[in-house]
Image (cartoon, rainbow, N blue to C red):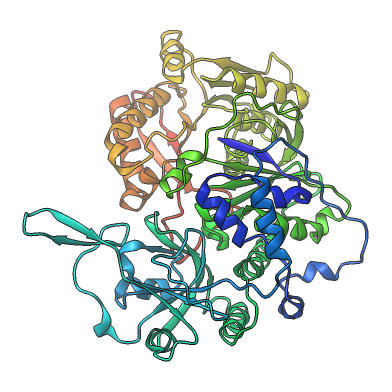
Length: 595
């Protein structure tokens, strides 16, 4: 996990992640908004918050030591700023007309490489320099040919390369054709082909990822925005200056504002009750690879898991700053913005980050933020290298559901992390007692501190450092029993290939948890998986079958009461569901033993 706290005033000297990002960053530094942009956004309601009374509403960004680009790079960026006539080329990706492209036209946001038929680069303002590929992170228009006969034969791999057999029997990878041309070419066959095609939308391109294009603006879902983007591109073809980060800024402003409206409809934030929630949830909010959590109403955590986010980091931060300034709940609040990323996810997306400087100090690491969720307070540390964004807001509704069933009950919270289920059981549910178990000492210390923060007595709630399998074994030997057990382990099945092994682990944990349920009267078990492979397998039935198998092994009868997922602020795209579903929380009643 790489954590960076940014100052937008220093955005011109941003982090140089790699040579490929440095060059792409230079293309995305110009973020001046066209006059027509402001007119469009005000009339379309994308920035309605800007109509609020003017007042001082600065968003501050804590300063952190970062790797800086070289002075030569800074000079190039300054030179580009001083030449407003410089224009970015126009990139286009054509996908095959088939059943899969129909899904793209209906809103699926991820375009796999195997669906790409050809790519195009149109050089404007007389720039006829050739290019053999579209650079990573470039903004592209996505079109589909209206002629179904143009579909190319042959299978392609996940990166879009055709797989052909040579005479030696070996398979040869051939990249999809790329056409580079100028708008002033006399033979404008490529331009005509694009004009005659059907527009799907606009997105960001990645030649190294299995997700060749991440669609950010769908033509049918955002017709007004798409119309403005088309107008900008047409003006560029006629010789007007064009920079792709202006278009990206338009898209980000619209999508983040839509996300704000969506959370306000959920009453998030809710003063005095919940000030910690997910503001942007990747594909669910039309920004694949980007997530933003708000902690304590004072800190915004940006989580980047796609190459385009790193390449366009400065534009994202600038738009997020502007959006938070206009948010009605933060009109008198200074919001810190913290940038995080996961190098492993970025590597899968074709981008390898430079190693983090181990000597680099973070003087804000120990600073805590009090986050409130459902009136329960938590100490969070957004500036440290904590897990994910520092808080798991996805279990908010599930914590409340279980708490309502815990009055006068003995509760066991397994893999408790910061104690969320145990704390809710005591504070919201008036449980008789609660024990939380986690293998991490940091988690146990955090949960204990949260119990003290909420004024809970040690005799009523406690947290133990132990492997949960060992703890359950010891508890069974001691003949301990509980009325309510929550089992929320970390991701055990990161992929389909690990599903069988993970299923055996899930089976054993659920079996042992059932053996600790009150034997005379039975009790409740909330069992969870945050593994998308487990959640999506057989439409969710695979996980339920595993729990049923564990019940047979424990010789306990189980009744399914409800199945839920992540809290609604973790939005999902209906066009790609259930691909975005990763969390399953299944509530069972476990019957008495020997009955």
